[in-house]
Image (cartoon, rainbow, N blue to C red; front, side, top):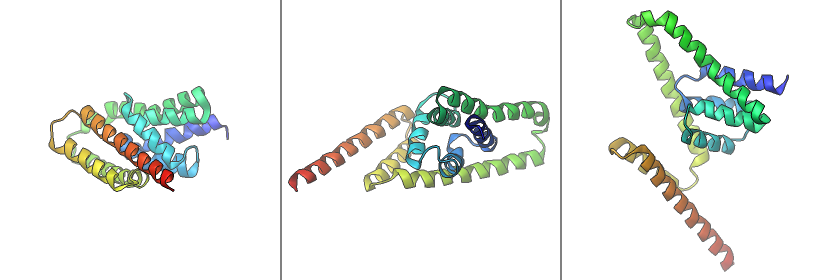
Length: 187
């Protein structure tokens, strides 16, 4: 099959299942583009997701764009972006014309509650998978806990918290590298 068609079908399919945004879609992306298609590996996907979160826009669309670019350049990026946006566009049209009048309906309300619970499960699964590839030292756990506490229990700006954790992580990595270099010099 043509690679551009594969890119379109893959990201259109993921876009159809991407309820809950970028965090919920990590597990689906991991299954499709890492395990099945092998377009990127786990570490690359983790990097792509990290970069996607820092860019303006939708995390999934940013990720699709980067993976499409990685696979087939500008054309691949454009096709992946278009394919990832298309299902949401159609869903919004459907919701606007069909479901909007039924928002008070108990069945519709319960369906959205079920979707919310499913999204929560997807996000927890994504956290578990990301944790496996990202947490390599005990200090990573400390940084994760510190950022969680700061986000949940303070009124600090999220950007400032991200910058603080990034600086601490950078400093931690510099320290680890210096210890490793010193260890090689001693031998």
